[in-house]
Length: 155
Ligand SMILES: Cc1cc2nc3c(=O)[nH]c(=O)nc-3n(C[C@H](O)[C@H](O)[C@H](O)COP(=O)(O)O)c2cc1C
Image 1 (tube, rainbow, N blue to C red):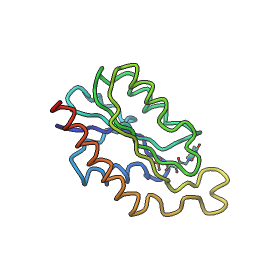
Image 2: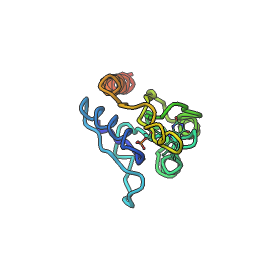
Image 3: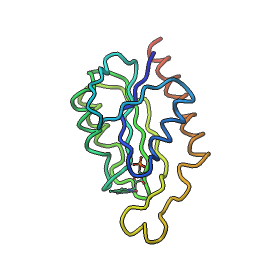
């Protein structure tokens, strides 16, 4: 079954790096939510939503994309990267999933290089992240998601 991940990754492409690692572990269609292309999420067996954390939250374009496009009951998972203070993390996404009766297969997060605002003056924080260990954890996470999905379909 095909997987799509709807994402926003702008600061250093950290979140995209994590998604590309996950795509090594299984085919994923990556959908940039800022591109004016309508994707039918109904065609996918499972849908991920991914973002950097900006102002302690998931990026609003991803949240709005899910609100508009996520079909009822679709299995979902969430991915995010952050500099050091994840704030509400994927909470807004979990709320949408609950409203739409979508089972949540998991959530993955790791640090991502951050040069926002004053952090630029000190050369940034979370330097080198996502690193090889983060990417390996991301691949393992996505394999777990696939296993959960298979078990869910069988039962
Ligand atoms: C405008 C802006 C706001 C940010 N706000 C936060 C924040 O509230 N908490 C945090 O831990 N990191 C914050 N960061 C750092 C990013 O979450 C981190 O670098 C992330 O990996 C960026 O992902 P991306 O490269 O995929 O865009 C912020 C970065 C930017 C540019």
